[in-house]
Length: 182
Image (cartoon, rainbow, N blue to C red; front, side, top):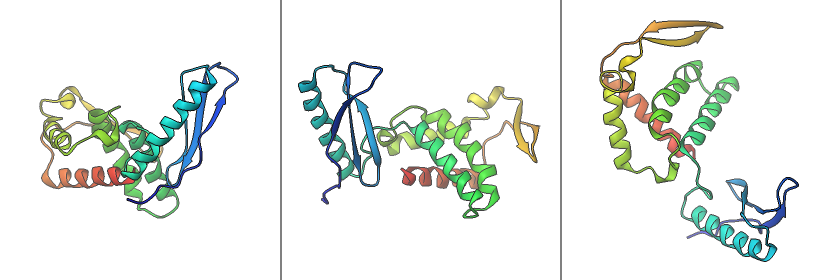
């Protein structure tokens, strides 16, 4: 197992709180700040070391140093896709088609669950949920789908039928790329 590069933890107090916080950086994951929940400096130093070690171990195992919700990572990924299109690194359909899929299906199902706690079984349950979304699931009562084209807000009637196999494959590929983005 490779050693993860990380800065030493720094304990500090914010002006708006008597409690201590810790900050440190882990290569590839940026700076991490977290509250320690104590105003006792000695206890804060012990907690800071413990949190630092925990984050480094998680990073060495290939996990995010701190637990991040699926929703947060999905929104970051969606913003990154839009930036790729703006930079000319991706085709325009990526910005038009993918963020609504991420929002309507992925975030609606996985929500605030920690992204690294989502198992293959959970993904299989998502696929069953997705097939039923427009027929018996949350989309059954949606009458119109609103979208933007050329700066105008438009709507179209919702189709209350199961998605095609090609649609499910495209969404599965997008979901895989979202998980590898983390």
